[in-house]
Length: 191
Image 1: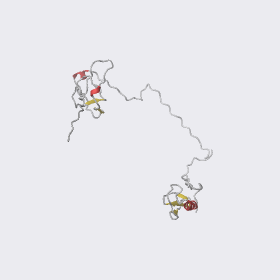
Image 2 (image 1 turned 90 degrees about the vertical axis):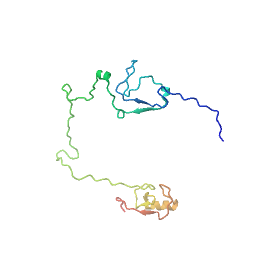
Image 3 (image 1 turned 30 degrees about the vertical axis):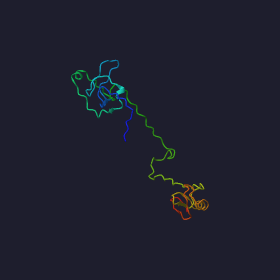
Image 4 (image 1 turned 120 degrees about the vertical axis):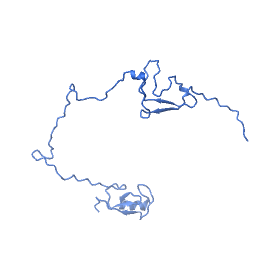
């Protein structure tokens, strides 16, 4: 059971180049148009120099970098034109340049070493400060640190009270029982 629809599509507008032609624009081209010039600039791909219908292009423009496009061939006209060479390297060692100033070196004696003492350096490395762990419940230094099965560290008395009252971890609110924590021994704990 087929039905014929009465709607018709409008014919699609086509460009002068053909219905499915893609336009490749080289953005890294060596030659660039002169402002105010009416001459067409020769392109590196050999495409014809005709005005571009922007509305007919749709979105079929491809962007190519210089590494993807082969270098343009030089024809007789471009060989006759002078080539401009730009040297971007700056030579700083020319004789006309000013001499660079060197910052003066200042040797200071440290007040901790004393004025008459020798300048020996101590071979002992500075002692690393041991970390201090605090309980998130009582905010004091951990006494008898214990950890829960969810990995949080508390004082043993604090976690016991929290489990008896709330039956949850004070940090993540995971349900805990009396046997869901155990004592741990940290390097700086006194007990």
